[in-house]
Length: 56
Length: 265
Image (cartoon, rainbow over all chains, first blue to last red; front, side, top):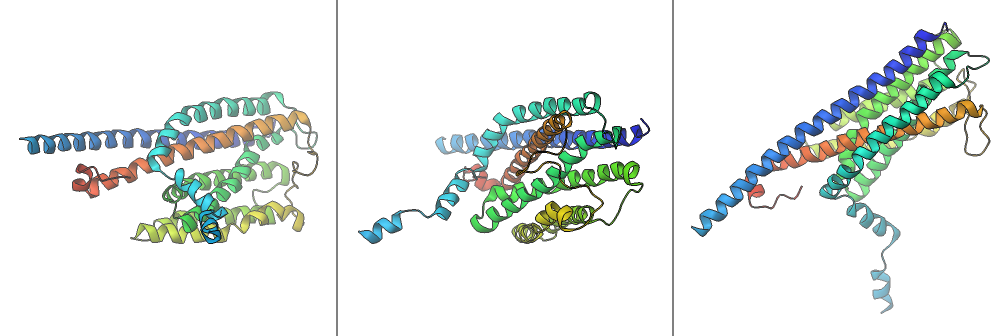
């Protein structure tokens, strides 16, 4: 098992890369979903306000 | 009559274009991505853990290389993904240049960094395998050098996309680079046959029986499948985020158009 450090380094490197990429993608998705939802909610409010104004 | 029949029959290119445009709709992609993301992610996690666990703890050591052969279960999937990721990038480039597929440009933007990271891991794990086996971290061998060129092609693609103020020009330039760089893929594949290299030849080919024991082949195939699913899951997640960001940009840049319900991104 003299090669153990090389094996551990390889698996550690691949595991770290997988964690970094997937956590990064998950956080980016979460942030974008929240931002899009808030923008679409604001757009919905603006639309209903415009329709209300037109009816009045 | 005859002329009308001929003009009504779509050509293969038109049919392919219609098919790609059908799935080019970002809204449709977001709905599809929402459904497949958990399946992709969890199957990738489970299959990769099975493959790597099998390779690390249950597969036998090699008679010549000893335990360092276990690096293969990480290195080979990364090598496979670095080439197939670039192939996907080249396909996206064709879709972008020929059919102006909007999702293809976003996919190319998201595949590039993931492919570059996987290629860097392939080179690093190759070095970690080479040191105990060859006695050196690096040699200017044809296989290693062509994979290093692939890594630089990925970096060039990422840099080129962001090098222009006009995003469309960046996409176009990067697509041309990706297509030109695809010539490196057969060089990587056949480098061990064309030149006398220190790197070992392929153990798994489409035409012949594998030259490795079944007890090593199965964990290798399983970890390769797991890595491929993981790569796909990460790219799909990033692409979904990319589509949402493009929708956010369109909402922010044209609030009046968005309010009137015309924004269609």
